[in-house]
Structures are given as C-alpha cells and as structure tokens.
Image (cartoon, rainbow over all chains, first blue to last red; front, side, top):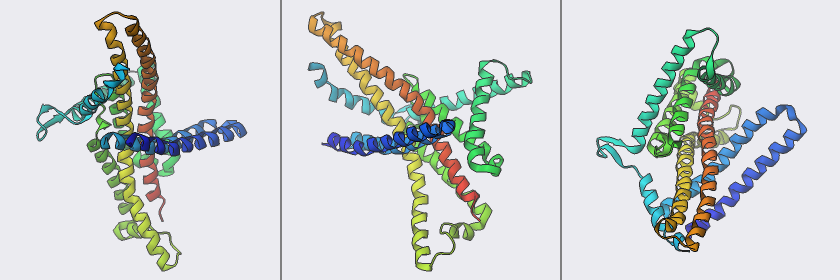
Length: 64
Length: 266
C-alpha cells in the first residue's frame, strides 16, 4: 500500500521536473548564450522537486 | 521467481544496516558508523587542504592536476556561490560558505566509495549543518539590524496593519521551515540514493546465487538477468556521484541565498 502511495506521489515530482526541463530547453533554444547560467538554475529547480519525491521514498521505507 | 521472493528479507537486512550502529564504544559514548566516516572525511579534507597549500606555495603558477583542480573548485565556490549571489559583501561570508561546501562535498564523496557511509547520511549531521547555517544568517541579520530591527524586517514596510501581522507570521513560519527543508533535503538525497544502490546490488547477488550452487539452464538465465541489474547499478552509481556534488552545491547555494536575503534588508 505504501509503495502505491509513493508511486502516486512521484507523479507530481515527475511533472515538476518535466516542466523544469521544458522551460530550460525552450529558453536555451531561444537564447543559447545563457546556456551555462540556465543549466545551474535548472539543476537547482530539479533538486528542489526531487527532494519531495525522495522524502516520499524515505517515508515509505520507514513506514513499511 | 525464486530470487524475487527473497528480496523483502534482504531489504530488511539492508535497511537495518543503514540504521545507526555503534562501531566504536556504544551508542551513548562512542561513534556510529556515520560519525566515524564523517571523521574520516574531515581527516581527508585536512590532508587535502594542507597538501594543496604546500604545493601551491612551491610555485607562483599553479602546476599539475591536483593544484589546478583544487583552485578550480575554490574559484567555483567563490564566483558561482559567493560573488554571483552575495554581491559586494561576498568577502565577509566566503570562509563560511566555502567551509560548508567542502565539508558536505567531502562527506558525500567519501560516502560514494563502496563500503563507506556518508557522514551526511544521518539526520543528526544534516540537522546540525542546517542549524549552523540557520544561526549564521540570523546572527548576520541581528548584527546588521539589531534584534528588534531584524524581527521587524520579516514583514515589508507600507502594508496595512492586519496584513503586516499576517505576513509577519507567515514569514516567521517560513524562516523556521528553511531549517527543516535544508536538513531533510540533504539527508533524504543521501539516504535514498544509497538504499536504491543497495537494492540493485542485492538483486544482482540474489539472481547470481543459484549459478554458484548448481549449474543449470535456469541458473544461467538468472545470471544473465543479474548482468542487467549490475548495469543499472553502474548507471545509478554515476548518478549518485552527480547527486553528491549537486546536493553540496544546493545546500551551500541556499545558505548563501538566505544570507543575501538578510544582507539586503534596509
């Protein structure tokens, strides 16, 4: 049961990282010269989103 | 599948291995495995820093892979985390930011080596690190604005009184939330990454085991599957190296951003 809950929770994180990647790629295509700066921002944003999924993962392990 | 049915037991054993056990002394006075590897990381950090300082002093121009690599790391900390975020005040906070970054980075990297544990893989260490960062930016704020001034600076000026009170409470709450998110993010990343790596290592060994006991076609098939698990394990291992650097970067960057927020208050 906990594993199913974790799967549901990951949907949100997946959408979040997808949106971040989408934004990063479109803006990189429009303005290739800011690529380096954008990549850091993208990594940062993904790290925030990923942390939520990881909290879910750890809570699942602890609860089960 | 026979091998898969053994997985839950092996997982329990793995998770038990990730709980804090005393390796030196007992749990009241002594070191758990995480703290032990944290000390190893600190010792490594000291050795690297002293060797770097000595080698750097030998010639005016940086020579060799080691000196250049370390200089690149320090410059990356200075330019990417301090100068770009803190602006003119970067010089004051650079020692703190760099110490935080190198400590977390070395802990994470030591944890990546098979058989070692990351010092940051336990809640106690990450909570302490987050507390250090929390106290630091509050101390900076109090030093700049005074206690009352810092408390007032949570809410922006020029709002109607009821709004000011509401915003103040929300901001106070979010300030304390920073402490929790900083600690939990680093801990969960290191813990979860190592659990995933351990799971795939266990899967590979469980599928390979029948081949060692008796030779048959089915056992050979299991061994072929375990090659697949090992491939995934290698990919996750590489991702974990990336995560180790990124999480050190994220923790330090967020600390810098929090310091900058109090530095720019009027």
